[in-house]
Amino acid sequence: MERVDVRGLGTDPVSIRWTGPADLLGLGEEPGFAFPVTVDVRARRLGTRVLVEGRTGARVRLICSRCLEEFEETIDSEVAVEFREGPPPASVEDTDGEGDAEANWFEPPFLDLADDIRQVLLVASPSYPVCRESCRGLCPVCGANRNEAACGHPVAPEAPRTVLGALMNKEQMRHG
Ligand SMILES: [Zn+2]
Ligand SMILES: [Zn+2]
Image 1 (cartoon, rainbow, N blue to C red):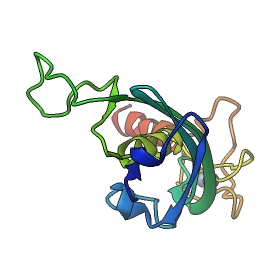
Image 2: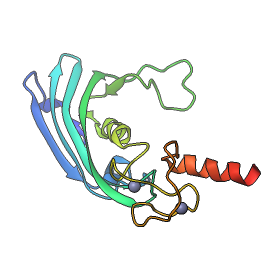
Image 3: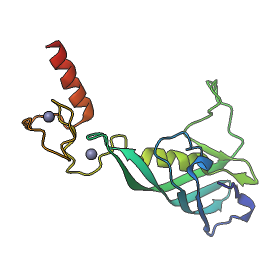
């Protein structure tokens, strides 16, 4: 996304709206970010700080961690970032060029929101996606998708509901 020109910012919030492909935010390599991303924030400048608040969202394509089927979901998350006028101080242990991960800096006249928006979206994207709460997952015995057909194997109350659990069960049976 375009950088923000801080010369246009004051104490009154300025609306920044953007919709564009996820790869312009550096999300092109991330699986699932196949659709446009929207950013809707307000920015204001208070002395040497710039506050950016609002929301960002995207439709994402995910793989269910229970049944391994692909599904789509909309993620939507709050953005609240404070930038300080920089350059960022050189940190003592900074060998990887990442700088101080805690602080956000801008060097006038521009401020770049892309890194922070990307982080917010990555955090908002579920680590263990589930296509629906009632998803029955894969049968731990035969691997059938139990949403589609009953394979006949009993569903024990303690049956693992995740793919990882099913795989571990298979592994145990092989060795046990
Ligand atoms: Zn599922
Ligand atoms: Zn089965």
